[in-house]
Image (cartoon, rainbow, N blue to C red; front, side):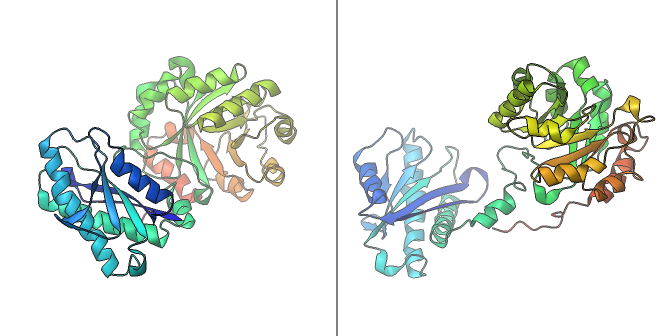
Length: 393
């Protein structure tokens, strides 16, 4: 039996990041503990954590540097404040009951420690590593994080080092507003994006006309002004499904669109490749007489199906919103999107029928007040539910 814990505390070059494994010395952790002290590696030499020389903590704890130790200055930080901070945190955790006193001679701890080469302030190195070690131990022995915590945060979280948020389409946040950026003027589209209000409800679609003019590289261009948005490449793929998915993926697409008019073989490869790469597969059923039959014909379902009325057919074709319920009944796991001349008066009807995604183009992108027009739809799909959420760990 063993437990795993992790914690990051502090700021600047002295920031501490601790990874811990704690478990029985007679088990796999004990074996790894012994191996770490007997099989040394250059630049990552493990050492026992001591409160002061000749006074190790219990449970015995081996400290493993994550960053390569290159000179004696690095050695001093590891063998000084980092080592002392970790050892004191373990000893205090025993005193405070975080680690059961009756297990201190049965357990051992492996503690992986990050020390930035440019860290200078020894007091902060000590404080941050002390706090991070103690928190990692509390988390390990308390079973943190729970699965509920992970499921709640996985689509809300932003990794601080990445500098951008990876957007997904969690079910709990539906319905969404998808803005179709069809205007084949890249600079104009960039200006539209800059005028959009911030909302996790918004999806951006690089429209087919835009992609036909600039190619899939337009996705990378749009990423310059839309780092955190979920972005769709509306390829309307009819052939070479696998190739087109790869092309869009390489340019940063979060989702790709194939035409429902494509053959079963094309759609099978299209969906397979999208899911292999971890992006969303979308099938647009424009001019498909029976969307349910089409979906049943393919090997694996996409993530989203679009009920689409073509721009040029808006005056002669009715919306097929009556298909929403039928699709959801047959395929409850699918998102159903609707497109084709939506406005704030017709959108509520689509939502009432069960639409998960409203696709809107000209009403927003050709508006004199892009932000205002967008907010009309945001009010319909609902404000972000986490706007006032306080980040607590």
